[in-house]
Amino acid sequence: MNDLGFIPVALVPEVWIVGAYLIGSIAFGILVSKLYGLPDPRTVGSGNIGATNVARSGKKMAAVLTLLGDVFKGWFPVWIALQSGMLMWVVSGVGLAVFFGHLYPLYHGFKGGKGVATALGVMLAISPLLGVAALLTWVLVFAISRYSSLGAIVAALLAPVYAWYLLPYQDYVIAVLVMSIFLIWRHRTNIQKLIAGTESGFGKKKP
Image (tube, rainbow, N blue to C red; front, side, top):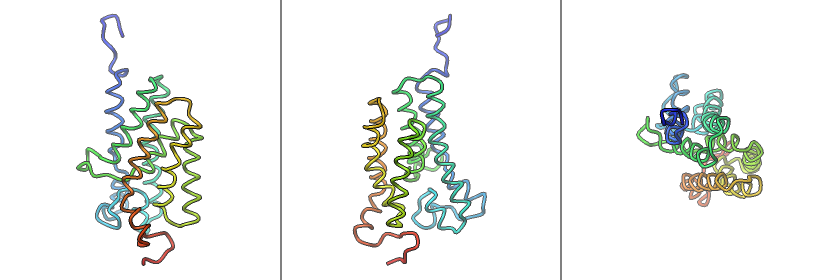
């Protein structure tokens, strides 16, 4: 607070949270697809704007750029909040805001992706060890099953457990738990397909 009794805008928690949501609303899958002259990912494959669906276009670099963009947008606002000395509940709010921005983007009619890469970015910013643990879980499950969705679901189930043991602050554990719940919810169709045996996997023939 300055001599006039005003709190600088940069220190207002609502500004950080709204800003994070707006950053999360940037759909790199759509932007990268336009850059490469590919179809809008919302109109092909699963209709998801994430890297997995972009990869179905056959342009691996487009998928990689989408993945990196979605991870970065989850990591950056949280990292900035941490570096700026924001309170834990503000940092947690920033992480959830950027995550929900990806799920329900303002710029695209609130119809977004499933949030796996963005959640990974948030966790990497909060705790690199937590992010790596979640990432390695996905890699291991995917390597065995060849199902990206199954890897994401298992990683989402285990992320709160990792957070409970690795993070010293309850606010962060709660934020990870909330993201995990929504990640699983966003994969409910994939869960049904996995149970029915109709889920598409990399290197697998469609049933």
